[in-house]
Length: 337
Image (cartoon, rainbow, N blue to C red; front, side, top):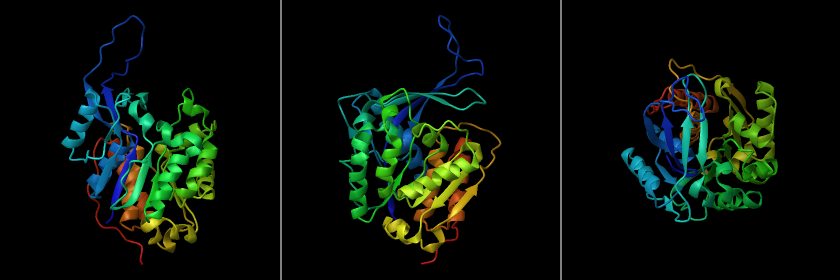
């Protein structure tokens, strides 16, 4: 099994325990519960799940030389996750999110971008890996500038070394500068250099200014658009609606780096759906999409078939929603050479 480098957005999540009646009322004091400090962002969420699944994983992102940066390093170390490749950037603060989640509802993020604004991928060491996973461009403006040219250069560098490239998105804040980006043009520019693409429906809807509610037909159209733009494997997560997988023709897999080139015809030109797996207790929806991505990446590294890969992605998302981490899965059927 080759290693995976997970790079890009990293932050510290600050999550207060909120009762169902918690709200913002000017001039009033509202009692809340304890504050939980945890790792957040694609680098932590996807990297942690991959490490739990048994994948050799490296993590790369930006922090500042401040107290939150120290806490973030401590949390990584306490979870036996590598922190050696974090870049300390002195010009801004460490990124953090206030994660507001009232029982029975989806979460809201109040996010400070911090040093993530300066992450451009130029310092990444791509040695010794088979797959590079990057997330999330809407929170990494240096990667998005000039139509995503910095991300294209990074993926071109990876592709030249035979490394399979993977990209995840996040919701676009239309009130920020990222709301002014032509995201359709960005996708047309970047996806030809992206082998695996794992956005959520909400990510794409916010980026492409889609007002329609989620549906099987619309999700299918979006997945087909991603494949038409040049990606080899696209999965779109839709929360309770589960996961959709769409793939390109076999010749695109042949140019998809060491990981995809060996999957063979079983993965090409597939359209699969998998319903979300039910859970008894919803502990959190935070990080569920990243967990699904980790399950998919584990599956392609292990040369599982597409049906098994999609099932594992759904299962890892369900475990994350339950508040846990997945166990190392039993060996599944692999694609034949």
